[in-house]
Image 1 (tube, helix red, strand yellow):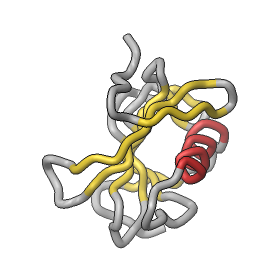
Image 2: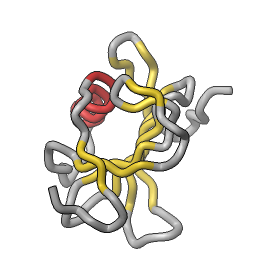
Image 3: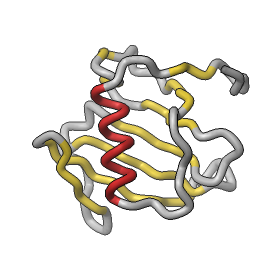
Length: 112
């Protein structure tokens, strides 16, 4: 089953289709950037306008490795922009699919 696309933006990176959108989170005061591959192997969420930029990996693969299926948070190696553009979404996808040195965040510890 593919990702719902109605009202969401599409982007192709490396020949693969991804869906992205920004939406409010029901459990926090933040809006989130959400990115998912069409096959749902990569699923990312990033809260916007936080003190520390981080991503939540929710999919079955992250940075070329299979995951255990739990949600894991990682520090972003770049700042989140005020306005989300397709170019930034592409940067996020490349970071999440091709790199391999993500720094995990344990609990609420955002120190490096």
